[in-house]
Length: 229
Image (cartoon, rainbow, N blue to C red; front, side):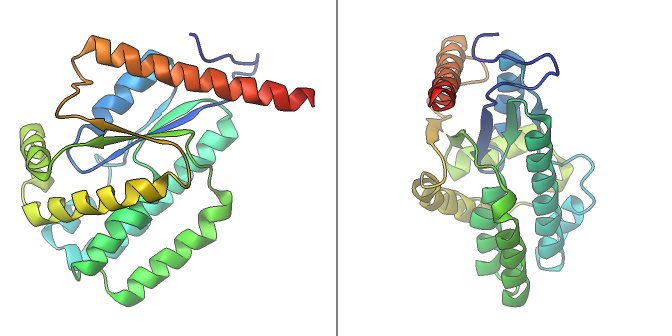
């Protein structure tokens, strides 16, 4: 497929790392799946089905928030390690940065994670930073808190039925605050999912895929120029 070339060992000559970010319910998994399938890249999803803490967390956030956040941090670091070792292009559902910049601070402000655990959590993340590979592009999927709540209801996960609206509002505000800062780490593209329906709009899908392929080609071009120096 255009935009990706692999060596005989299956490694991408210049891999492109794409991440899908956004609030709970915005539609990250759908877009992650669509991108992975269309580009022929492995897709890494957020661990939900086999998550040993998620149901307990939604029943009692103060009791389980630290455990859940450490679990997610560990799993996303594992994904980063796998992407680097495989040497292939990849698409990931939610970045590791969202755990430490969005969810942990919101849980701390809400009193669901005490200061001791929060500072310990951030220290663990700081020790990981030198091993992290920033995405080549983050797609931030945006929607209003009310639309996110409606989408959460539509997908019907039992453990999410008790998510309070004010939690989704606080996450939304944290995302809006984080996105400008995230651009200091890697490129970020904002997609208004209330206006652009990436699930069903084929023209919007094609336009986005063409843009990603162009960014991948540009990265390869830069690598080629560096190699010739």
